[in-house]
Amino acid sequence: MRTELSTAQRAYWRRNLLLTCGLLAVWFGVTFVAGYFADELNAIHFLGFPLGFYILAQGSLVVYLLIIMVYVIVMGRLDRRYGVGERP
Image (cartoon, rainbow, N blue to C red; front, side, top):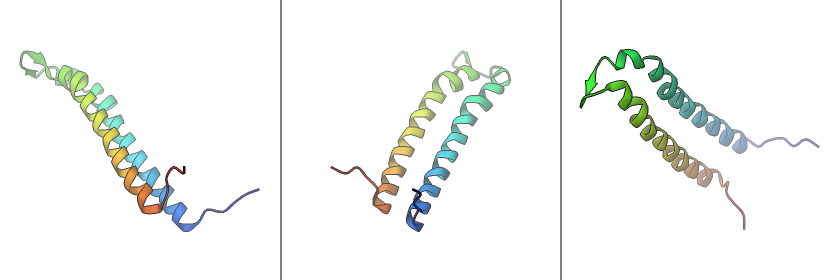
């Protein structure tokens, strides 16, 4: 039994996928691209420590929390806009 998706459902999932892909791109950039350039970043010192240390050990955690916050806020808005939510 196959059911067709309505136009609203397609729009909801399209926006959901765009948000997820965008946030995954940010995650990839922070995790892998910054890690790739860690040696070059370590040539710069900040408060006596290599800059690569601060970016990868401290800054990446802050970005991960921001990614989660953005996802929760935007998905909450999308759910309200399209009437998607938990049912009692």
